[in-house]
Length: 301
Image 1 (cartoon, helix red, strand yellow):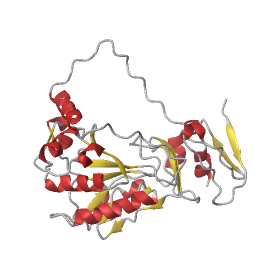
Image 2: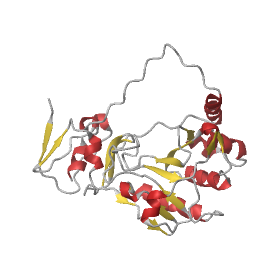
Image 3: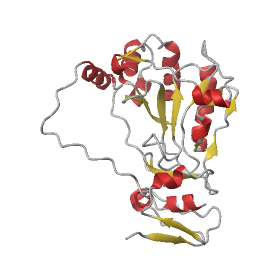
Image 4: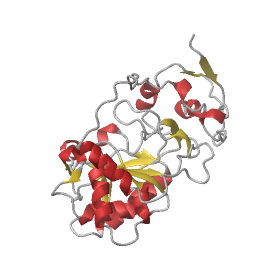
């Protein structure tokens, strides 16, 4: 039976702090607004065009949460352009927006680039998306195109231009498009203390492991993952003043290069399927009941 929450009045700035989805404080409510906890969260958040008018706060985990008070990355800046504007996914936590602006200035200082093309960050209130990402739900994830940016694109060009793939051999290696530029941008991102993880295709991680001759500590944050050969995915840590944000465990010790080379070997020589492995279960769509309770108030504002 569907459970419905009747929301009653909330003064701006009183959204309850929480320490994670399982210990979330029930949110205050708003009169006259009804939110169905059994409803598909992606439909509700995917159709919310503006951020919640509440103090900035991420709630939940990167793949199961929302964000109050998100701020917009301007469509165009001196060293960046937001891409695919029709998606309305250029919203995030203020730390994410500041990080992207800072990284774009570093990218613009490298030869052959005027800055960065920025892909999806989050929806205005975060939450599950109508299409695409499983994460990007709390305003602390961002996709950054690997190709150097020339800037100067109009809105239509930003919809139609294709990003450039950097992989060959199904991601086991980089291709001829990869250069020192890509490595320096990823390194600059990884060295920012706000960054928790960077996801990129295995061949890129192996290439960086093989060619980095200086400080290698930043490589620990760079993790191989499926896809991610048109862009790399940056994930920021939970901000210090965000008790409702559920942190990710730190990456394993070491530079992660042995793990990346194992990914590479598995691409080149896939292991035989395990006949005893259980069949994967179909992925279940998230409902509002799956998200922290504070996301009810975020959606309603």
